[in-house]
Amino acid sequence: MFLQYLLRFLAMVVFLYLAWRKMKGDFGDDINSFLWSVVGAFLIGGRIIWSIFNLVSWDTTIWDWFFFWNKPGFSLVAGIVSMIAFIFIYCLFDRYNFYETCEDLMIPFIFGGLLFMLSNGWIWLTTNFWWPVGLVFIYLTFFWAKRYRSFYWYRSGKKGFLFLWSGTFLGFYVFIVSFLNGSGLGLKLIGLVLGLLFLIGLVILGELFQIFRKEK
Image (cartoon, rainbow, N blue to C red):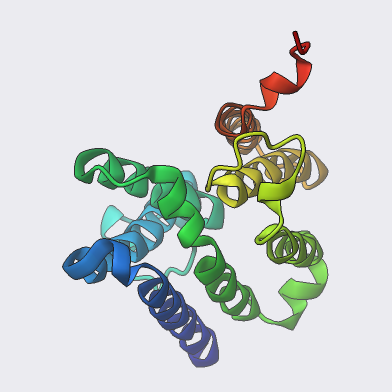
């Protein structure tokens, strides 16, 4: 248990440091409060939403949501969705570009996410669908990071491709896996809706619809 929490703490430190180094020039003095708020949204959102769906099986009170050391449980999908929602609201009010901000957080999130997955132990890694697909996802993200602006079909070349592609990939992956492991309707709908939203965003940002227009 101690090793698990230690690795998750290191995951948070790695994410914060890499994101701070990448984004301090754009955010200036606001970078520290922004990054800590992102981490808070991820942890609190993942914990609360997991607790809501498992409150009946706990047979306990709402106060146990705060005692994670006695009542462990966390939803990675809910944490990611909560984090993205916070970033969207933050960028909306402070006039930062949402797509560019999320893309800047992609690589730090991947390194932090690797440590977070390792914290679940060897048995989890060998029996869970996330691990092998996660490696493919990481490889493609790094491979495309410096290349996507040259893609013929990504007409605009705008920053934000990695974020929207990742969201599309993970959304549909959650949707497919929810059928394989017998998850409830809620997770199926979350995966499908998120996958479609990110796909639509990718089409709009990349101006993919222009591929089908005939040249005059």
